[in-house]
Length: 135
Image 1 (cartoon, rainbow, N blue to C red):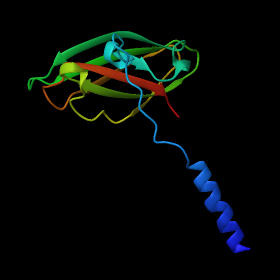
Image 2: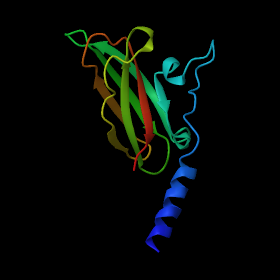
Image 3: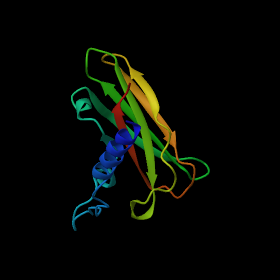
């Protein structure tokens, strides 16, 4: 009985693991990923009607590091839970450091929240703030 179960599991793995590797798809000439052209991106489509960017500001710290402020407004009549992370980018839109940890933010109904973060080095020239629904 155990031999039959092992044979069935082995066959399922071989059949399920078949195929691949698969070629990666690239960006077509003239196209750019959204994160290379937009400073704030929503990773979940459900946020587009409930959350808006009120303002964005950048500055440099005394050490020359990029500092970012993005103010969000909750347009809904319910508290909104979101997660926010930032990727700092340098020459050629290449990340200059690891993305920031995801910050869990609760914005009360019809209220605003100012998200701030700073790059860890002076190579950052631009940024992408990623926003997704919180849990």
